[in-house]
Structure formats: structure tokens, C-alpha cells
Image (cartoon, rainbow, N blue to C red; front, side, top):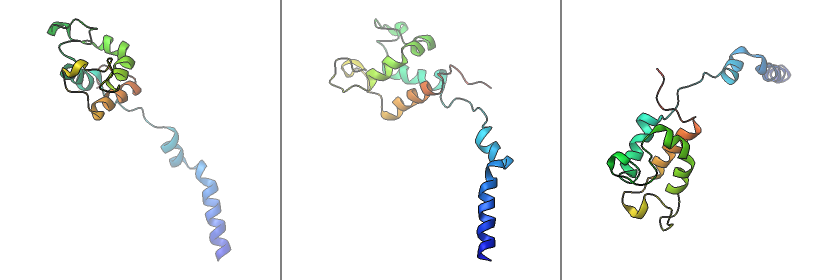
Amino acid sequence: MKKFTLLFLLASIMALPFCTTSKNAAGNQKKTAPTYVYNTDVAPILLAHCTPCHYPAEGGKKLALDSYAAVHDHVDDILMRVQLPKDDPKFMPFKSKKEPLSDSLIMVIKVWKEGGMAETRSE
């Protein structure tokens, strides 16, 4: 009986790669919608933490970050500067004019970047 159980278990394990349910679960994953998008997730973070310096409509004189294209093109620099030590002269937000981004807000921007930097959600 032990030999039969062992043989059955071994045969089951060897057959697993050929199982259609296993193949579908592993190989045919559906493409999912992005976790975060610019319009509803990233832009509000930047608006709350980067005004007025980086929003010209609000009186800023620095690099404008008030559009999807600008943020898309400068996301690496944004992420680098918000993660610098607070005493670094390049740290943003500059001179603590605004509250620094929390780790969770920085993670939103990172995940948005890694997910392809979608501007809006597709329906």
C-alpha cells in the first residue's frame, strides 16, 4: 500500500506541469489596470507638497511639475530628491516649506513609475 501511495504521489507531481488549470494560472495572467495613475494618485501628492514653487499657476519660479508630461520626464529626479537626507541642500521640499513626503507617499510615486506611469485609468 505504501508503494502504491508513493507511486501515485510521484505520478501526480510529474503530471502537474501538464495540467491546464496550472498552466492557465501561471502562464496566462490577465493584464491588470495600473495600481496608481497620475491624475488621481500622483498629481494630488505633488500639488499638496510641491506648491507654490513647482506650480507656476500658484506663483512658482522653479521647474514646473504641474503637468503629466513634466512629472513623467522628471520622475527619477523627483524620487531622488524627496529621499535625500533632510539636511542635504537638494532635499525637497526645499527648506521645509512643506511637510516632507512620507514613505507611503513616496511609495505611491515609485509604484506608479514601475507600473508604467499611466496618466489616467482606462475603463
